[in-house]
Length: 253
View (cartoon, rainbow, N blue to C red):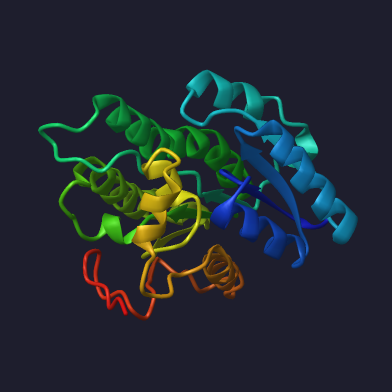
């Protein structure tokens, strides 16, 4: 395969989904991962029928180290030349103070946002090092730059992503590998629906009174970061809706 290969985690919806379509339009073959198998297969058919690309789907849970290893270490050799790793899969679970929050929610966020990212990177980055090229993009959040009440562990996981990304950039720089972080503010995806366990009314309130970012906005930002010339790396990019000034300050009309 002569086209570049991008591996996108959490590709069944939101930022991962929109990025898959945008990269397919820009000469990338894709490895798409997610927990919804039927959804992955539907996306694969859509992409391959509409664009000149090949798509490989991997159905596993990035929280589970054995599943990550099984899926990636058995990749056909032609798919192991991964040019881009987009560590996109992430979530927030619950919205409660540290003294009463659900500990299972904490486990889910830590396992997904931090450990899942590390599991993926641990397997893919040696392939990039061997080839002396590649680009890793980690999706962080405004919550990785500021903390807010009732979000202590979610903010903690995204602060961890920021720190891991910085160290990763230093460690992989001698191998010519780019490492970037993109930190969005409020993006209207499944994020709030997941946080509130499917409560559509509560999720809708998060974006009420202002225009949030869209998943496509972030996908376009990812493409911009990837399309810089070889001597340019976008280390860290914070992108916010116009009517959001911080993690907590919104201009709602």
